[in-house]
View (cartoon, rainbow, N blue to C red):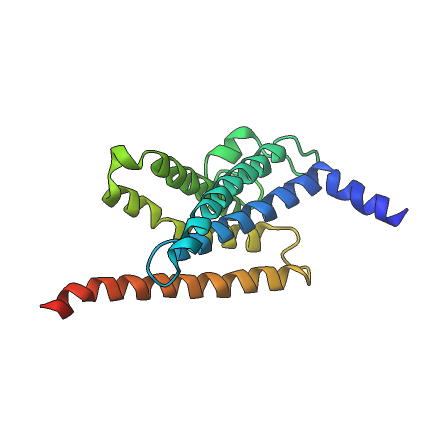
Length: 190
């Protein structure tokens, strides 16, 4: 009987909100980490051919679960949000700052996804500039979940947030190192 109560709580609007939020965050995190390793020579070409589609799929799933997270907040009976509170950052009555971080993160993710679909018309330089917003995106999503998530104080949430932060930082440092090496190559050959 207790497992049915647990299942019912996760199938409630609040359960869907939490599950969609965590899933969105994890997909965004996975997408950015895979993206960091989808380019460059440190990863064999065959593996990059697998990582790139996984990176793109995780990004889209993160976006879709983020949309679900926001949409279900509008029908929640305990702490409902208006559509304006969802769409206009920092206007929510409940935790306006933390909620706004989530809205801004979703807008950044939308810009990244759109730029990826329009890479030919944008050009690689503009696409790369927009794509670099993926690092602040993860930080905003992390801060949103940590400060606004109702489960962020649970014992199981700490390893999720801490582990993802450590892996994200390592992936970011790796990308910075790869870029630094690439920027130095022309200098070394002169």
